[in-house]
Image (cartoon, rainbow, N blue to C red; front, top):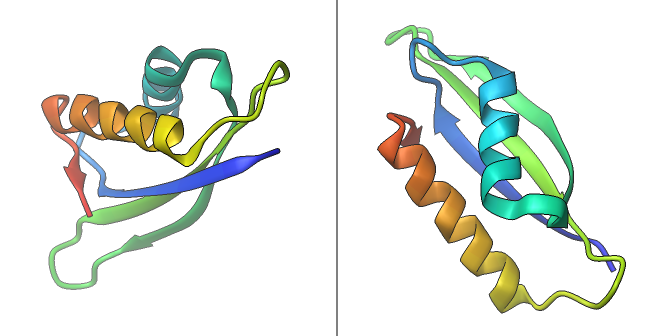
Length: 88
């Protein structure tokens, strides 16, 4: 079955969606079946842009556990922090 997780962050100045998609693929591999934007807004006072993406995880060979997906999500969040993303 499908399992999804959302991830929200303030976009770094050099943000490009393709870089984010590549980061998901690099950290989740084939288990990340689909990645898409579900929300985006620009803060009126700071001018910073916030994005929220949904990552859909699925394996065609077996059922994934929440623990597995949480570990992948934690790995992705750590990677993004190291790349300068301000996670929300």
